[in-house]
Amino acid sequence: MDNSEFFVGLDIGTNSIKVVVAESSDDRLSIVGVGSESSEGVSRGVIVDIDKASNAIRRAIKKAETQANISIHDVVVGISANMLQIEKCQGMIAVGSQSKEINENDVRQVMLAAMVQNLPSEREVVSLIPKQFSVDGFTNIRDPRGMIGVRLEMSGIIYTAPKTIVHNTKKAIQKAGLNIIHKVISPMALSQVVLNDGESSFGAVIIDMGAGQTTASVVHDHNLKLSTVDFEGGDYLTHDISVVLNTTVDNANQLKLYYGNASSAKSETSDNISVEVVGKNEPSMISEEYLSEIIEARLNQIFTRLQAPLEDAGALSLPGGIVLTGGVAATPNIEDLARDIFDVKVRSYVPTQMGMRSPSYSLGLGLVTYASRLNDIGIIADNVVNGATVRADSHPQQQPVASKEPEEKQVQQPASDQVDQPAQKTEEPEKGKKISKFKDFWSRFFD
Image (tube, rainbow, N blue to C red; front, side, top):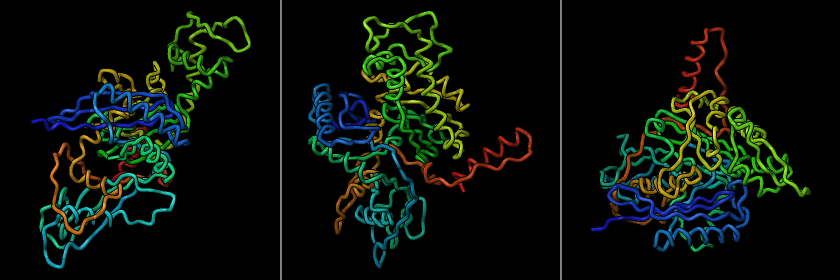
């Protein structure tokens, strides 16, 4: 009996739109198709022209359909972490005046109760993560369906984003003739594949280096705690090369891809590169070292700006260090540069699947992995967020459980809203300072 299921991840990036088709069978996820198309109508990870973006999505989907030999209707889409807010939520409902069996509809009702908050009109809930349920005071329940009780409570996390970002994304996808089955905050999807279990549990920082922006996200206890965005990415490297060398953007992009290096000290000083200069008949010759200096300066600036909010949150004390991914993470020696700036261990993540061996495919792979691992409660939560109707009566609908959800400790606000102050400096020895800093980090996440 074939019990396989298909998942389609849609990554709408600034420079390219990537579609990843995966088949889930017997708890195994296999990539069966990939589609990539140049982006249109997208700026800094946000859709600014719905019609153009819709056409580009349609073309990327068509390529993936051809390769996977299936017809695609439903997608899992990543939502940018721009202006993301992370908040705790809690809800409670009376199941009945007398004890009765809790069903799926009761779970939906308590989720809706938890989502009733005074959200500003310009924000929308993108994702609801239930952490635990309580039935008549009995806590730490993962799935209350089938239990007997009078009072049902739920605590969890909600992730909210600006309505404009979410609306434009949904509209473009709908105009492309597709249906969204899951909306996932991009760093949450990335954490499914770029981090191992230990890093996700004890904590690590993911730096997603895209074309339009660079996003640093803190994952701890298997939950997204903080996300901060720097609105510079790979396109700024291309722009710098174009301006400094007085060459076209296309030429600059080729130079970046074929000769780029994040470390001028490790680049070749003797090898010369031919550069077509605007207004000159003959090309100019530059060294790889000079090109690397241009790239290194911009990357240094991006990392330095991200360093401050990560230090303020104590995230650079996490044992998992930093994991780089996204298209720019393919730049040679970028790990060394990041290691020098952040002074923590750094590694890069690159998918190993055939046809996807580039860090630019990390998010697409993360989206299908996230969807395939959702358990019953996660699916119900997504349906509630997406506006599924609450029925007067219902019965549990069993679906295969692919993963277990970890327990939540505490939620950090995004860097833009964070009010934590760094640990006070004292005259204690250096070792004492490190211990104090480490304790301060844990107090931020576990108080």
